[in-house]
Amino acid sequence: MSTPAPEAAEQLGRDGVVIVTGVLEPAAIERGCALLDEIYARPRDLALEAPGYSVDSGAAGEPILALPDGTRFVTNLVSKDAFFADLIDDPTVLGLVRSLIPDPVLSSLNSLEPVLGSGHQTLHRDEGPVGPEGVVTVNTLWLFDDVDADNGATRYVPGTQETDELAEPDDPRVQYVTAPAGSVVVMNAHTLHGASVNLDGRRRRIVHVYFTRRGRRTQTDWATYVPSSVRDALGPDRRALLGL
Image (cartoon, rainbow, N blue to C red; front, side, top):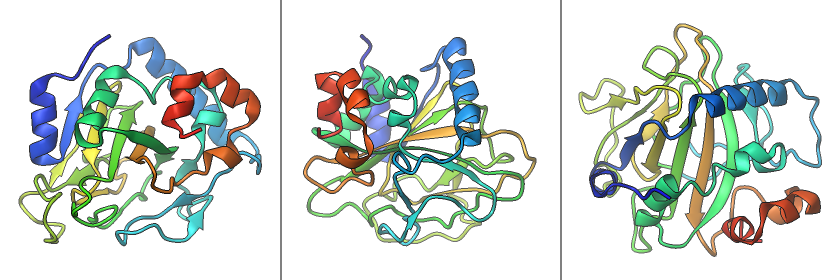
């Protein structure tokens, strides 16, 4: 089992973001893309459709099940195919999460794909700057397509996780995630960040494996939205990561 390189954890602590390449093998990328497309096309099963939340304002807003601009959005992937459960405890990625949150719990497992002309978010922090409690939210973005500034990449301002400063869109410090499919972006979600517009319409399938501190409310109520058959198949370690 691999563990995160010390320099990756150091960069995550300093910049608030680190990109780990080559986490997914080509066969897993192909499988994930096919599954996401199949799930996007499924009729909605309300028993599994856990609400998502917009956090642009720095706090969870109204629950949402769809986005009006055509962006492909699905929640609760842990209950929709066993493939996605494998993403929650990858040792390298989870090790980086634990470098910021020693005892994390999975808060949500969603996918978001902007279509041509959509996807813009304001630069925001999911729950404000890091406070006395320390880091409480870490997002991991699993890239199933190549990502860059032209197809809706996440942009961020390094080192802003512990400040309350804001940034304009043209701030020279803004960086765009540029990485090949199979990479994972680990982000201290207190860092100023936001998705960008998909300018050229290329596919940008990303799965968000989002963690918070144990004991805090999770975005997805796993006890409600994970069927007993799925729960049993997860095994004790993964159930513990979901707080079940």
